[in-house]
Length: 503
Ligand code: KIV
Ligand code: ZN
Image (cartoon, rainbow, N blue to C red; front, side, top):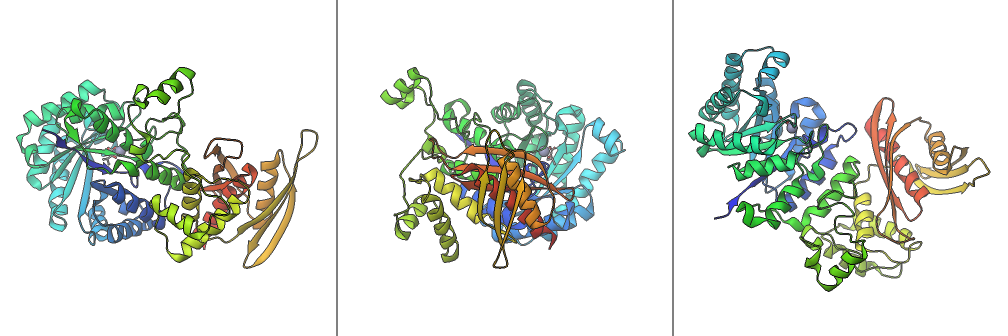
């Protein structure tokens, strides 16, 4: 019989710990609502005591997201648990997630406590959380490097104190599949109380084994996996949600386990997270990379044309990839655009629709055909824009291999056109210098990524930047058929985030 595996998504908490990927309240709500459409079982919305902003963001997600359980992280101390509860209490289905190191390394070197004191903190914190919230998850941080007997004692005590979920994390990505699977199997044997609760795993990817370890745990009795969209997270990241879910779907017979995910929402969720966190997805990323379903060798293409099953084990449509599908042009009116947006799953109010329509016309005037991928990119960028202190109006470039590139840019602020000109090491540098002059603020470009949304010479370009402004990293994204304009829009987007933050 097929077992249900609970999907606990921690993109908004562990995923957000990536430097420069900080999300604001509005962005967290947007991703949480998309995760609800994807039908994950649990959304870990953040770590409320980490900052007042995160507490407010978790609260907003808890109040505005229906369906999944909403979890918030807390250290095993009363103050953290109180703050987590303040953020979570209005959720339809709240969960407090308490964690404490259980390995000797963590206990001695980080917490400066012995095992008995750690055990007591576990019991006290779970009991305390349980008074506030029925659903309490307890994580034995660094479980994969914890003495097994002690791990069993902690887990038993946590269940007795009222935990409803026990998580056994491989915090530092040290585990290997056979060993980690064996730990889960032995835990089930040694701690019968685990049958009364959900047994969860949480794997990091330091050795590239996070997904393999999660799957080994599932085979050996784990009920829940904690993972992130695109595998984003601390250091080398967390186990990738889309990979685990598609393994269970594609190789169902091998695991006799399933998830309740609406897999057709995977691609859109992946794009949204990549954009809002400004973390590009590598082209060869399994399941959702741009090459994941591309067949380039002649032999493969021939096979695919004869029968897709020759070289494809999953259908792109199953993860929501609709390749180069129909097409709108500048002459397609509002009705056609609204219809296509509906097919892609976007229901926009009048204001948002008008913004998307204006940008669509602007792009379609320069790029003859707009595909589903183009439209998705346009919509998501328009919908995730920060309030614009400065908006982009136009640019001109003079460039060549025998001259110093020059750029002139016009931005709009409070209805007024502001124009300036600057030179640079290349045309993009010249445009960035111009923008800095107009907004009267310096930035240091820390990351720059440019990719084509679709194939072909007239492809829509999508630029992502990370800019350090006054010591803080801000991300920006921009799209246009002209890659220099896409870069300018992305750079300006990062500055607008800075201004939105500082006012
Ligand atoms: O990696 C880890 O151990 C964690 C815990 C807080 C669950 O993120
Ligand atoms: Zn983690």
